[in-house]
Image (cartoon, rainbow, N blue to C red; front, side):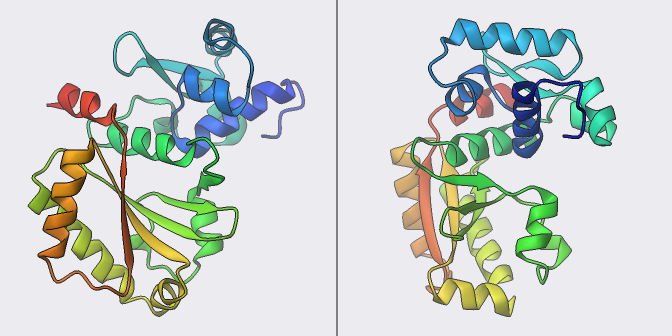
Length: 226
């Protein structure tokens, strides 16, 4: 973030928020301010909101989430929508991606749009918008977030996503070397098991690994959006 008037820590927090499209005090504390109390982290983010580097929105009461503030988008040259609240589909998708990518010892990060192009220049643009993560070994995850549909509906979406990506020769090759997988983020063990069973009943190819991961608080966001 090319603004020498900003503290290095402030730049790190803003860059993190921009990468993940949102962040919470708990995640900022764990990722950037380890050892600080949640109250101490909240004081840092409150200051950043006051000076326009972050903007606060309600997540699940009483917890907030943060987006880039007006000053930050001016410095970075980001579009105005970067500081606006996330919509009813974008919020659970981006929140679930944040939780998955920042799990303790995960050693992975969400790819920015620029990094998606860098890592996968051959990827068709229509397949580049859903979240992707990369781990420390260069393995790629394509994330699909359960937005509350039936297990059968989620399974059909997953099967379609797998089919579309396997049509890309480079993804098929990465998948054959266990360097690419599709990860389904859902709300709990029962739903994950039901989705896994439904996927087994589709024509989903075994050429791509499909993994299910649980984001428990995702259920609260889905209830909020309905």
